[in-house]
Length: 195
Image (cartoon, rainbow, N blue to C red; front, side, top):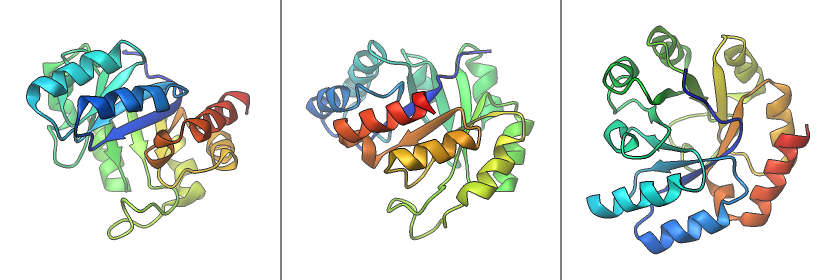
């Protein structure tokens, strides 16, 4: 089975230029793993970004299995991407995860034998506020007990939250807003690795 990094996963979302990639590489250096989500630049720049980012940290792409093949460690399948079972068949060398938010999605992902789940939002978050409510720690604990590695996501802004997630047994914690704040990301990483 491919290696799934433990610790803090910093998400690079909606980047528009390679300069923003460079800025992310600097600001998110304390993270244990990076994820590239919905890049907004050309195909060539996406390839350059993947190659540049994967030189520094394990890198996972969101929904872009073909891009992951070009230098990333794996892919996170979402509701609008290729199904995880298809990705695992086409790209057996990649770690394949699924972004899930409810029991139906969790069951489907586990039936597809994914390597990990990205589950949330745990707390309220601006990116999901109009269509997904916070799942909370109790629901997270139930997911963690399902015998699969879980990366918790959603509304994580403090070291105390990271410690709570770690106590629930998560394999990692993914952050989007905190990935833009180098000092906060260092604090979150220290909280994960010290708890």
